Image (cartoon, rainbow, N blue to C red; front, side, top):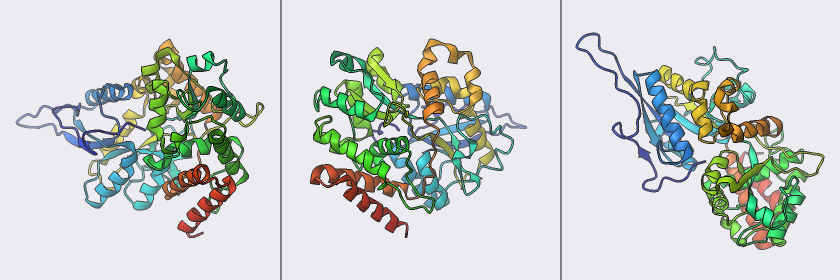
Amino acid sequence: MARKVTRRRFIQMSASTALLGTMAPVAARGATTTTIITHLDFVQPNDGSPRGTALANNLKAFAEAYPNIKVEVQVSPSTEIPQQLLKSAAAGKSPDVAKVHLPDVSAQVGAGTVEPLDQYVSGWDRNDWLINWNSTMIGGKKWAIPWDYRPTVLLYRKKILTDRGVTVPTTWAEVLAAAKRIGSDNPTGFGVGLSQTENADCLAELFCCGVISAGGVIFYPNGTTAVNSEAGIMVFQWINDLFNQGGTSKAAINYTYFSLADGLAAGTISMTLLGSQRVAAVAATAKDDAGFAPPPGWSATKPGQSNALSQTLVMAKTSKHKEEAIKFIEFMTGPKAAVELAKGGEVPPRKSSYGDPFFSTPQASNISRLKEILLQRGGHVPSYPPKYWDLKQALAGAAQAMVLQKRSPKDVLDEAARKYNSLIGK
């Protein structure tokens, strides 16, 4: 995820500022043709963030490798990219390449906005990926290439835990006990967000992590949701206990993904569960006081698990420069871009990337740890349906009703399941 662009909802960066493509010299005869492709991203190159610097450096490297391809970067908030793609496709103005969160890919496939990649990647090494190649296939076709991988991890502030005699929790029961000991405010023991804004990703990631750790699933084979299963009720009961027993702030009803990341960086939140891409961002402010650990489990003998979430690169169906677009996708997800990607705090997706000497240095220690967490705890890739967004909204609404209206976890989850199953006609 990325911080919202503040000046405008949508920015196209001009060639004179941050396109970072190189215009090929044009001679009177035999002129070299320069192809311009557009890339939609939520990260603004050179914005001062670790990811912004990494993207700028990789765009520069791509320009040097392919001087006849110029890349125009369009910037839009991450939560708005799915709708941006749908709108631009309807207007016939789609970018050639876009960065899309894995759970949102199926909706783009269903809407016909993206191009199947099979013919362009037939020669790629399918075994060179940390997570199975099929994780970004839908209906037997390859639709997206992972930009990174991001297991869910427990992020925490070391000093807050140490000052209160709290060891880093490994189970959900330990997280709850530690959160109660720290308290609900200044700092909050454990940050959880129930807001329906920003695609309700904040709650969805915690919920999925908890359900999978309990051995449950989010969807049944027939496509109906399993959120009201025993595993789902267990997660909601834990959230209910967290609120009722003083382990989190009442303001968490309105917390979003960014609220949690910002609170953790500022030290007003002591622990929370977020994607691994937030580790570097929090550490940029909290420095050595920032810590992270694998996701909690439900018992000491059953380690916690998480989804293998990722940002992916897709090619627009209407792209007129598909050969150039796939070169960009291959470069930006390949070993040559991996070092900068890792410096930006993201886990490179290809196994071959980790042969670079950089990954044996202290600077890469966090990425190496996150890679191991991904392989040991985060290899679960559910099949996300096109209306997954609607399920996340229903979950956030159910959690709010549980906390504010004092309804039971089973009651609100049964209602959420009925809403979603009715929406998909099942």
